[in-house]
Image (cartoon, rainbow, N blue to C red):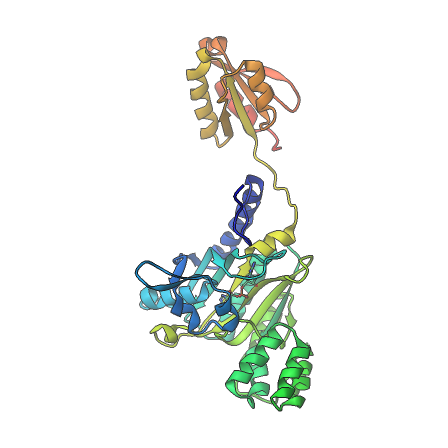
Length: 410
Ligand code: HAM
C-alpha cells in the first residue's frame, strides 16, 4: 500500500470541518481589523529565501530545479513572498497595507507532534507603517486571533534592540550564532560558544537580560538607547489595551529579517513544539528591489493551534437522507432541491435497494429520512421520519422543510 510522504497528513471530513471553522473565525477577526486576504505562489525563486531568511530555514528548504534549469523552492514561510509581491505589485497602493494569508508552507524538519513538513500558517503583514502603535496593533490582532481559536496561550513580547546592545561587541557572524543559541534557549551552547570566541562574561549578561520581566531592569542592563522612548511607548499601549503579555527580552526569533519588536505565543499541552505564533518588525522590501519599507507581522502555526484545541466536536449540521422507490424518483429529486435551498444537508440514496434497506443505511449518517414512494408522488406530500425518535409523519413538502429547519442540530 502506498503511503503519504513523511511529515504530511491526510484530513478526514470531521477534522477538515473543525479546521475550516477555526480558519473562518481567524479570517473574520483579520477582516474586522481591515486586513485583506492575498495569495502568493506555492514555490518561488530560491534566492528569495536565501537573501535574508537565515541559516535554519535555508537548511530545511525543499529545493528543486525545474525543466528550464531554474532553482526554485517550496515556500518555507510567507513573509518573504508577500514582500516580494509588495515590491512587484503593491508599491503604488496607499499605505499602510494590511494583508493577511492562510497558506501551506514546507520545511524539511524532523516530524513530531506539532511539527510537520507541510503545515499551514495564518499570517498578517502590516506594510509601510513605522510606529509603536503599528507594532502594538499587530500584537493586539495576534492576541485576538489566538483567542477566537479557543486555545489557552501566553504572549511574550521582546525587542531585538536589547540584545543588540549587548551583542554589539561581537563580529556579525558571532552575533548570528549567539542569537541562534538564544532562540533555541540553549544556554549551555551559548556559554560554550561565547567562551570559545573569547567572550566568556557575555553569556551571563545575556542570560540575565533574557530573564528580565520589567523594562526598568532591562534598561539597567543594556543602558540607555536611542529607541528607548519608542519601546516604552509600545509597552504602554499594550498595557492600556489590557491584553495579557509577558515582557521577554530573551526572544531572538529564528529568522534573520527582524529589526525591532519581536513576539511569540506559546500554548499549553503541546510539549516541545509549543510555539503557536511568531512575528515582529522587519525590513525586506529594499532587499527585493523596492524602497526600504518598515513592516511588521506574524504567522500563527495553524496546525499547532488545532493540536492545542484537542478534540473539539463542533455542533454538526442537521442532515437528511432521501429514500425513494423508482416511481418516486422525480418527486424525490424535486424535494431534495427544496431542502438544499433551505440550507439543509440533503443526501439522495444511491443504492436503489428496498426502502427498508435505504432507511437503515440513512440512519447511520443522517438525522431524518425523507421517504418517497408512488403515494407521496401522487399526493405531492412526503413522509418524514425523525431517526432520533423514530416518529414518522406525512407532511406537505413546505411543512417538512420547516420541521427539519427548526430541528435541533445533532
Ligand atoms: P516562524 O516562527 O518561522 O515565523 O513560523 C511561525 C509559526 O509557524 C511558528 O510559531 C509555528 O507555530 C509554525 N511552524 C513553524 N514550523 C512549523 C512546522 N514544521 N510544523 C508546524 N508548524 C510550524 C515565520 O514563518 C514568519 N514568517 C512570521 C512572520 C510574519 N514574521 C513577520 N511576519
